[in-house]
Amino acid sequence: MSGLSVEARVGARGVEMGFDLGEGEVLAVLGPNGAGKSTALSIVAGLVRPDTGRVELNGRVLTDTARGVMLPPHRRSVALLAQQALLFPHLTVEANVAFAPRSAGRGRREARQIAQKWLDAVEATQFADRRPHELSGGQAQRVAVARALAADPQALLLDEPMAALDVTAAPALRVLLRRVLREGHRTAVVVTHDVLDALALADRVIVVDEGRVVESGSVRDVLTCPRSSFAARIAGLNLVSVFGAPGDLLTATGVRMHGLPGADFVAGSPAVAVFAPHSVAVHLHPPEGSPRNVFRVTIAEIEVRGPMVRARAGTGDGRLELSADVTAASVAELDLMPGADVFFVVKAAEVALHAARAA
Image (cartoon, rainbow, N blue to C red):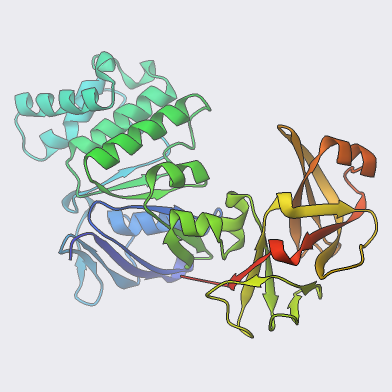
């Protein structure tokens, strides 16, 4: 098959996951720290041998534990770009980029031409004669991208490539990666915590938690209709687990929920209620009237976000965390401060009900 197919289990790390992507497709892997995202990349790169599993890239079997196949990293046609550029300190920038084609048996002149091509592609030709210690973080990461592409990999693996960069360098590298991935029609897997990376680079998203894929789909679907707490958090939405049938839904904390069932909602099966912070009203006393969702919470944090203020709060038992976007005038009128006990209220029409997982 064309593209990348992964099925693997690593017992010592609590990882058991699988995913597929077509040739030229970019997959973003999201999840909290320790979820197993980097382990997945290491399995594809051949740096971690799974207890059981199979990795196939464009019809080539890279790993197959049942058959005893485990190709070494340098024979996989896979390039891994980490958080740190990890350039060879004793080589010039040009020599760093030329290293991969030279290792593949290309002549010195041809390898230099390949290096110049990719340094030009990442707009780093002016750094060709410098040593890595003379580069900024953003410049070094551009060179690392060129070095990875000079190896002509069939798949590019990016492990938090923007994490070590400052706020000015990260957007520029993101634009660069989008261009080289799209123009080259390159198969790639991007591990990231930043929703901007998924939006800018990826075609599809998987969310990993505790070593399992808990959610998958297009970038749009995962970020607009999340089924996992992590995806909801990075999408800026509230997510509450519920169970029961419409009209008789309860949260784990005993709050009765009302909402609009989505096409995937199945009564009696695990489900989630999703709603935006701007749909949450804050009251000092529980309101009466039409069906509403009412949460008694304690304000934990107040954050100014442009013309609005985001109030983050949680239930007394700490089992539920919610956010509400309100005006500065409302903050003053309600005297919203950390430690204040209030009620978060959401109309039923603002709540979408979905199946808990769509992996």
